[in-house]
Length: 267
Length: 307
Image (cartoon, rainbow over all chains, first blue to last red; front, side, top):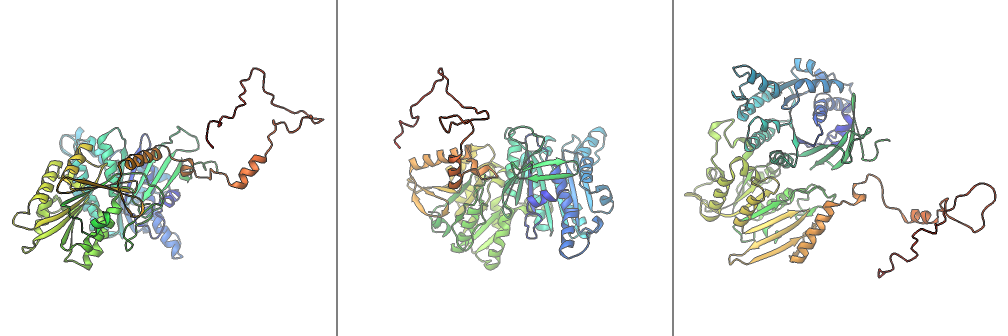
């Protein structure tokens, strides 16, 4: 399950104040499991804790008061569905109940390039994303979700991939500014943005630094510096203004993410 | 010097804070305003120190201070202050709808136009703070921002008030064109405060061209003259620390030995060490006897040290 990771980030505390979270993946690391854990936290974990605190039985996911909008720019939506299923979260059934919505940009781009007419209004004929229209689409979806649910969470996977469609860095920054502005506009909203981060690519480096400065909590996912290990999948660094900083090692199991301190993998 | 900036007493038309991003260094914190202590280990890029100075500055300033917030946490921190005294502080949330994506009527052409809209006709002088400048340098364009800064420093806003003091924070790792753009900004500034590893280095350019330098260390801010050798030593020391972290800082377990453990370690007799000349009877023993061809050095290796 994802509870160990959420606890490591300090998000299971009632006084957790991190509404804007940046997830940076370094090198060959893949941070999609962190996003799946956030989805689990929003849809199941938080409401379960609230129920336990009130001495109630565990709620069914359909009774959860938080809704999630996932914008996937690198992995397909099916990837996140499969990953979440392993954590015990059926996104297909949740989407039928309106608790979960997805915007698969990779699918939208490929559809627009294959077919003559654009499938989505935020993609032009050459396959470039129009970030202004994409923002309007995201905003209207979130506002609609907020009408029905107590809180909403926007998760954007690998935002750096939007640059590869031909969008300039300055436009991406404006897009992120507007997403940050939504946090003030929509009550009880949280924002999670992941990006790939390398020092070699100037655009990715700038985007990573920009996100780090703009967020309340930064989670960096990287591989082990010493190479591969059968006991450790990678390293996770946490830094936040209201969260204790820390370095953890993690191991991805079939249905669980195990977290431990460096050197404590065999314990 | 930093205190005089916080008290709005420093005569400097353009104060530039440069935040150098570093890894968190544990529990060291700035304590420059006892009324607004900062959380432990929070100041990784100088933003918290800037925010603390900013609060003190707004309270002390005699003129109205306009804060252009390009970071969400600044808006959150200053909202209480604005509610307390709306006459002295005006917050402009630049993240809301600066480019008119939500409502085209809200579209702004630049920083000055945003300030102009909220300044009353009888206002003669104002102070302006931008937190942080890194954001508009990208979203509005570097050249455009530079022109606006020059205009703000040198001349009054069209038919409006004069900007008495401009204070900006810029993140050194988020700049278009890299270090060269930072050089441009530093060239325009009359006072530059560089924040790195919780040490503030201040360069103040007086009207005559004379430069004064100060260095402020972590903890309670104490002003001490800035010496060039100290600067280089400090920079080297910081670089060394950054390059090679101490094992006890990165390990999740205790690396060092306690006095008792050291004593026990010294007492320990390892199995290959000869304890008596006479071999014990019964059972096999292994002794290490240096070979004749071994290059055995009897000299004390630390003999040349003056200890």
